[in-house]
Length: 377
Image (tube, rainbow, N blue to C red):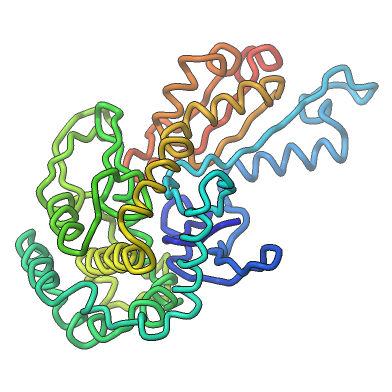
């Protein structure tokens, strides 16, 4: 069951998903929160391809698709599809079973209660992301040549409450103002293949987030000072700070955003991303102690998130190695590289985009069995 502690992403591989919308879902006798994607399927070529294969097989069998005679089928095609969700490194995305550690269940229950019944804990944003923090952020924004977002802060965001006014504001989700910067900077794979994590609750960031000042200093440094060696689509390596990787939010794609917000979308999403991360850190340190939730997070990260690529490959190699075709969505470039080196590479033609998406790192991939389709088509 999805916890929903973070921006959710739909299957749209260009933009972010449903923002920070929280919806209650009943799991047994416990109400938990789940983020609900608007689109179960996207319009990608892989989906069309898979549906075409399925339709043809229903009408005329695999032999029709393969151009075989209408007589008894001599070949059988097995097609597998798998959304790998490469960008999702949020250890709190799903409600896990950890019977050996009752502190986890207690923590998740307290987070749930905080979101459903915040009461006097639903404080103004400026109590969590302070005026001093905003002033430093705005100076950074104007320092890199972006417009000041002081008006947005003074007239709107500083006065909102952290839960009802920010986390549960559906318009922020529709405008992608919190989820877009999270998508781009949550986990960044550098030119060496090593991941770098934004200081936040919802990824594999390992350093302490014991209080707001500690978080803010790390966050500001990461976004504006850390120069990361990045490889572009042509393989050239250059240095970039995370703020340079952010993408404008286009009204043509996300109509909920106003023309003014579209024009200011780069600094505005940076502000919203900072507020969002600050709220999460404050929430975790409010419902429990840092020496409780941070060790829990590190345990989950070590056993679930860090081993995601080898675990994913193991599933594909053990359970689906007999497939004729695999269509994989939201695949990281790191997983593609590892797949080509191993059993999948020996058994399948691995077809990836000519220009891999190195920023969002969500790529659609087709695997064609070398035995069934020796020429790769």
